[in-house]
Image (cartoon, rainbow, N blue to C red; front, side, top):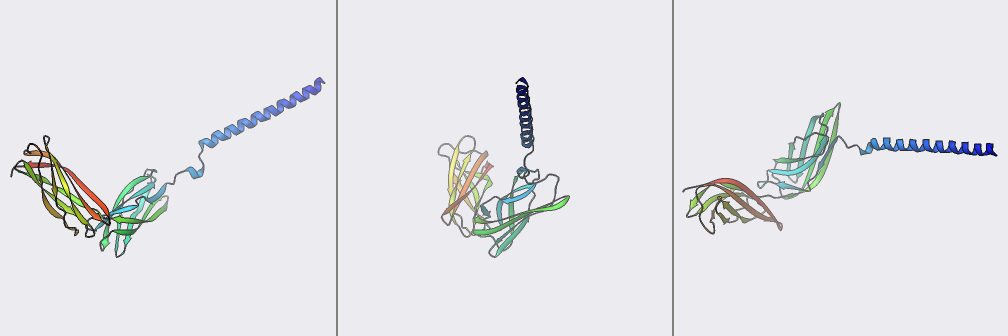
Length: 254
């Protein structure tokens, strides 16, 4: 009976030892598996994506701007980094410089129109990034973007005193497909703040300069350095698009 019990006890020990060894093996497998990510978890060392849903057209229609995201190895040599735009009778092409560090980085590209001029509406955009690292690898992407207009507003570097107020020039450029809505100028010389407005500029893709009179509600401007801010707006297809300029100006005597 004792021998039988011994056999039972020995068998139980063997089973326990096997279970223990199996548990250790499973634990080691989990640890090793956790330290080694699956192959699909590795990020690609080469990728390009058009991340913008909309592109911006310059007021004169000569360029189109949108954003990319690129991924490439820092040791790779760039062979090709290029974007193309096709829109009706217009097309464009440009090269860009990606930042390679095996992380995804944003790149803003501006494509000049090589034929015709870009217009508001749909645009077909494609991008290619090819690198050489032992062998040549290539990534591509393409997308349909909505091209939107833009307005340019540029303040003069100087303003002229005019009975306590100042006169300052503002140059506005807007595309022929839009309607100007005018704008506003604010000037602060460190003591007083003044506000003035200017009328809508003709929208024909050409720069137009208007003079805005900026007067403080109390006090008067003095000659010297000041901060100036201007914005202008246009309307197209029910959308309002604005742009601004902020700069340090010189207020001088007339």
